[in-house]
Image (cartoon, rainbow, N blue to C red; front, side, top):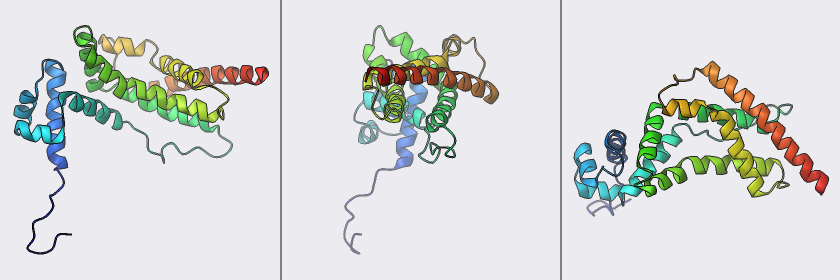
Amino acid sequence: MAKSGTKSAGRPKSEEKRQQILNAAVNLFLHQGVTATSMDAIAKESGVSKQTVYSHFASKDELYTVAIESKCRDYLLTPDDLACCPAETNGLKHTLELIGAQLLRLLSDPQVIAMYRIVISEAKNAPEVARLFYQAGPKKGVEDIGLLFLKDSEYLLTEEESITLAVQYLNLLKSDFHMRSLFGLEDILSEEQIRAKVDMSVRSILLLYRDAIKHKTLRS
């Protein structure tokens, strides 16, 4: 703590101001696209100076990445959420169910659907936009789920095999729902529909997972 009468070493940047800038950026990204949105426009939209924007975010790419990560965090499960069920319940099954339900809620979020549409529309002329989106969102999700299979198999499966299972699980969850959502042909899923999709997807991926384990064991 600074002594009385001396100047403080500096206060932390305002989280409220940072969030204000982030909200303004998301609004502009969704309404006019990422490439068409400038840092000047973000500063104006958020009611702060351009210097203030740069004091919180070093570049538009960083701001865009944080915006994606922020939306993903809204649906992020905490360690307590992921704590396994009672001993007689399969821990991997329980975790996959929780993650699956949150993923479908994320993909049903109107802002997320809108962001996917923006990225797809800009991917050809601005591949960096698509790359940043993929790395901050889908790629991380695949890696996190792949790690679940890797650890549960006690590293009997390879990292590549675990990632393949993660991709298969995500594809089972999304089925044609995700594409229909992007086309505006799908209503928001109800919690009952989410549970049904997750149940079917988990049962299917566990069959594939156990089969993979069986083949690895037989070859050992």
